[in-house]
Image (cartoon, rainbow, N blue to C red; front, side):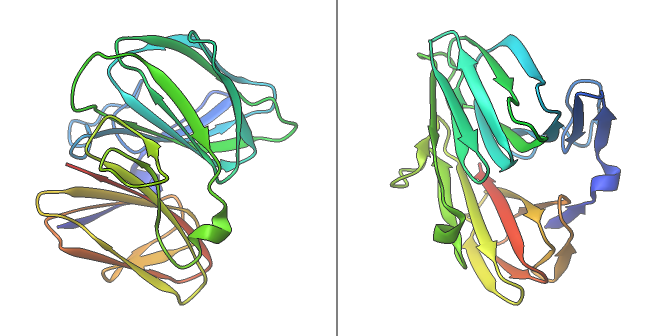
Length: 231
């Protein structure tokens, strides 16, 4: 099963400081048919104005992955962590039993991120945060695992049997991704247009897939792709 979810069909809100699109029900956007995809609960496409951001607020029992598309995001939390994550790089926060955090765009230009929430395998546990650079050149023509609870080396750890992967493709290049039985994949091109198993996916549209052994992604233009694989 493959379903294309065009960005025009998603929930979009412009608050001035934040222009956000919700792939799944979130905040003021509610669609009972789009409550998540397997253990994937949230995929928000956010543009944050310069000098703005999310003030301190709490989370618990969620794996929160931030993929920075443009600009940079500055993180602060109640554990004393602070860090700046730049375009192409990733940060992960395991909310565990509870954490407060803030995310700000302290840059001179808008910051654009994908914010991805995955439900953990178990509730509770000590909260944690980490970030890591993932040079786009290292992802050229192939998927690189950015965050994982499946034992992938060099990925940021998450507490779910899930994987977040990224690839950069030149026009005409193809890459395949093997999807396990009873797994769910959700793919969004951050940049460019791709074709997935014959389905055209423009930039920032979402593609949901399940019960498919392999996804073949072909770039119709230079593209940057993010994929989540969950139970």
